[in-house]
Length: 376
Image (cartoon, rainbow, N blue to C red; front, side, top):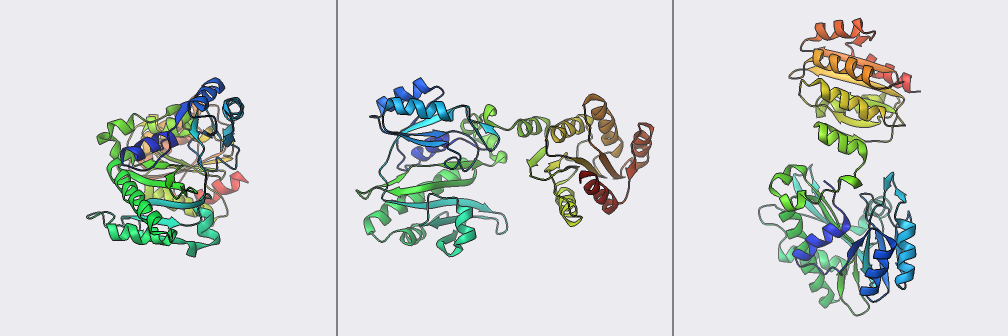
């Protein structure tokens, strides 16, 4: 689950990080009033679950309350990576002497969190990793012990020479680890972490992603979910119990099982196509899931072809077939559909599909190749 910057900052404050004050506004008038309460000179920041806000014009400096209202009016309602901005964070402007990046991410290959720090803050860490990877310093964390004091100090020394600043940064890193650990996060980062001309370390930005599997015991954080800020497809998938990630290709994939879904996407790429999504309907024998899946895929304007790849174990092929028939009858889908079914109740599924004018295939390679051709 993604949370907004202002929500992540709230968590950071609770763990002792030096975060400037800030409040959320939904109208230009509210933004002006907040700017007035903060002394006039503020930053107005779009609150949206997308990176690159600054490049998109979603972060603006305002010198007085009237200018803050103008900035808010320009940002509210704008789209950033397909998501509409409904609220802005108004926070006092901070004088910046230097910028750094600090963050923690779950490294699934080593099954442990990894701290990353870089003196090149204020830009996307992915860009730093691509253009100047040696500028990023990494510290794997043993989850039994967490971030130790000497590890925090060593990371801080990669960023700063001044011992006073190093001590402040070490405290920030220790607090960031506690926020990450206690919140059940998969990502927690500050970009940028700044040092003011007076030598104060301040976290002027905050980002956190929370593991969905942690939400049952994180009631306060679960309540932070902003449904309005989510893409409609992601919200629909979650409510239907589907695992869905939108990609940039044009071959819509509907698969059961994460491993098969990954293999299907690899095969789409092998045959020269681009998958439009990762979509796993899971092991349920519920036709409604298939209806929801087709609705999500069909609503993606980039999709030119739909591929079903079903291996019936727990999932019954005839239920998937019934779902396909029901969904295509209910939805206005003007897209070619390629279906590959094999496994539990395969014969019944083929009969259902053929009676309704669909062709069911057995060979996975042929099915994927046909779906890719249909998308061109």
